Length: 299
Ligand code: NDP
View: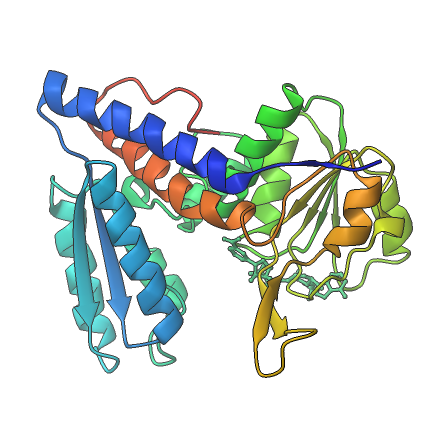
């Protein structure tokens, strides 16, 4: 079998188009422009790239982008004061604090200072609790992107066996909760799971969020299953000396021989993450204004 490739890059383009169309309607019919504020503390090069990309895509879909770049030695007090200001600002519908933060700042304290209704990353403890109890919440962007691709591919996910490999707060756990909400039978595997290959082999859906290059191989996959590879790992290029290559947590070649469908790396889950950030900002804006939420862009 050769798996169908789930093209996350193209899918993300469709999500952005839907967001842009909805934003245009909001402006025309309600005179509202959704706004996303991104806060970056310090000069971590990878974070700077992400923040630039988020700002660019926010503007491209017609939203307002507010970037707040703070020095690496910014005090907790100053950062919290900025968040309070953004929480109170009616032109800001989504707030994202780029992680990781410098070591002297308490990440939990900072994230939990964001108004949960503006928490477009879905990391605030209230949103975690709401999602965990199956209620309406802001949903973390990466798992939301995976869910959208799975719904698009399968239609209904009800009754399917899903194995999520990884139990982090930003990917594994929210992913498992979303799949449960869509009535999958969910197993969460992690570094202590026994017979992990056999566990994965029972799954109709495998979501790999491990951070270990090409760990999941074709012999872990049930023939015809869907494989969502969240991993982003940079490894030395196998043939070109001095160069690197991006790979996922799944061994693409062997998994694609067995799976029914698979997301590639790059071009799978990655592009969906920022698209879902835009979708979440739009959702937050609609909720804040008592308007109907965008269809197909929420959990
Ligand atoms: P974390 O390091 O926070 O969590 C990794 C999880 O994998 C842990 O629960 C860990 O288990 C588990 N794990 C580690 N080793 C093994 C193993 N040998 N067998 C089984 N489970 C194992 O990572 P994240 O969740 O933040 O990220 C996971 C991957 O997804 C990374 O490659 C990251 O770069 C990528 N990512 C991609 C995004 C995107 O936009 N595409 C966004 C976010 C992340 P335990 O808890 O027992 O230690």
